[in-house]
Image (tube, rainbow, N blue to C red; front, side, top):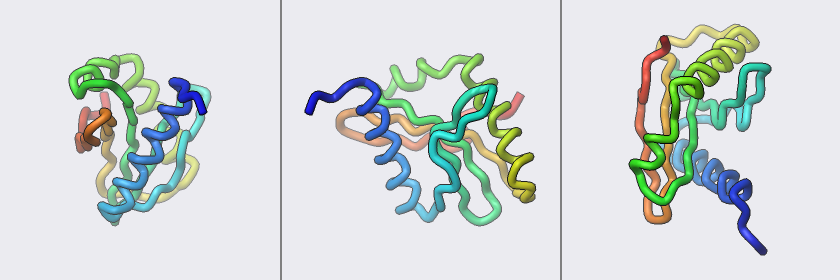
Amino acid sequence: MKWTSYSKGIWAEYLASLCLMVKGYSIQARRYRTPWGEIDLIAKRGKTLTFVEVKRRQFYRQGLDSISLTQRNRIERSGQAYMASVKINFDIIRFDVMIVTPWRLYHLKDAWRQT
């Protein structure tokens, strides 16, 4: 089987979701699509709702550098649409990033604040 960028990205999202579940999160949605964009993973733990952007890169720094302001804004708008659709109150809303490298998975909690 030939690994395409798409299939590697799907695999990275799968690994990230497993990591979150081991940490006690329940996955609410995968690849949640809205007119504004897509959220890779939406996870919940207690009264915390987390919107997770997953990046698969060769190096950690490349993953960090690949998240632009435009992309963060799209994720935030998509997150607002999700919260409006579920009509549940959460005490904490977070935007996390998970970077999957060939040797490690990094979980950056609260990677940015909503603008």
